[in-house]
Length: 625
Ligand code: G6P
Image 1: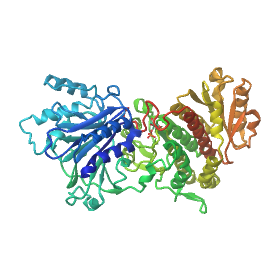
Image 2: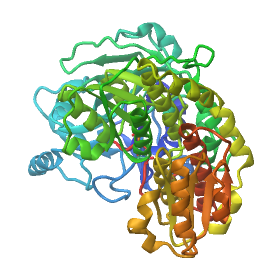
Image 3: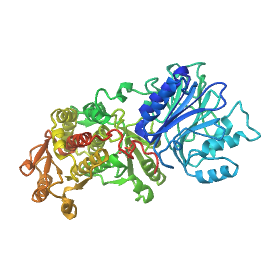
Image 4: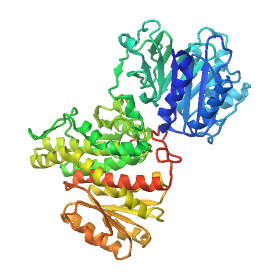
């Protein structure tokens, strides 16, 4: 995890640019934050870093500014941390420096051979001040600087050599005191280059025009989106050099790489809170728009067809995913089975260690960020065994998008809150369309026609749920319950899992989701008159009837029952409360029911005063296995 932002060419604005960038990246981790700046003639890189959220660093910088002692420089980099090696502390915060303070490094990922490097460097007299794996990097560079062939005018060869010795996953940016150039490298962790509009013609790794404006390196585009929309997505093994003259990208062999500058099509405002108290609430309310974007140009109701930019008709499907995306994968697998395609969903971390035979399987990685290490690992495993892979992701240019054979973008717009909301709804919707496109290939036309109008109505139906939800009042009633249970069948089973995950991750309450039929096989022992049970029951078919049976089981144990329902099954007769959704077929009802449960989780957590957008110990993008 961790977030990096670095820039050259913003003059006096460098420090503010970095702090702004960090504020856009703290979804990647928020244990500590730090900045490092340097400028022409400096002997050391000036570093300020603090344990805690970005505000702790901001306060220190404000005090320094008031005293006229703020760090200055035209070359800067900054980091927000999610701890892997060493507890959150000032010492373990990035940037890390060498013994002399000449070299500063920010890093995202894990250096797997750090202990061996550290032992070697310590034996050569290097003194380490942190418990991190990262700190070996500046010391290693310092060691190479001391070598006979080092030319102080050009630190690049030493930095390249140091990077070549690193094993594991990393995105690193290196700054050297007095050198008005930044160096970046990536291996299995994201690093993007932002270039000013006048650089537009410099694609192909050519040097851009002199003084083309500022250039940026970051873990993710929102860090510099306020300043430019022009982006180069760096690939594994690439090395970037940015300075006031522009930028170059080279491969491991030092040869210039033909890169392309892409334009991102979302607005910087998309990454602000727009008046909502939390990003999560804003993103819940953005779902109608997110789903419209997801469906745009893909559903032709008149022609009775789904048109996607991916063309698949697999013999079988294996989904790999983590967290909320795993729940979307379970949902997708159910829809593929309904389309007549054998499909299974795997937790990505389990798939990679014990992969099932792929045969003729299409392996679909569901990952909103496209950077989740466990999911990337599973996809690589599948590819190495000959499977075709497809990334279902929100992030254009992400590692998953680039490494897979095909990509299905969910197009929900950037999501900042750690708890996934609109990306889950968009994953459900995109997978729904994908499964329909396969049903269409298999001439199960009835399936497609019935579902197309429901898909078209989905954004409006989500809006209706948002406008009329009584989830806030209900949350008030159940705040502080010892446990919360969620049940559902078929496509509503993943919704039950997701409802519970959302509640536990942001409210810290104990919550569990179960397939409705499983409740009686053990979990029922935990059900009491203090434990609300949320039952997702839609339609009036056999699945609804069976779930109503399970509702009666908990009702007779005096548990408060909340039915999430369109009212057709009359489940409300056995429920204490109802969260209503518009009538819709099960596959879209699953999206609508989930919106109600998102709101319950949000309001319970809000009532408890939890840090909703940054729950403790969690990060949005988990780039370690
Ligand atoms: C983290 C986040 C979850 C997310 C999961 C998978 O654990 O906290 O909200 O569902 O990663 O992320 P992905 O980007 O692969 O969808």
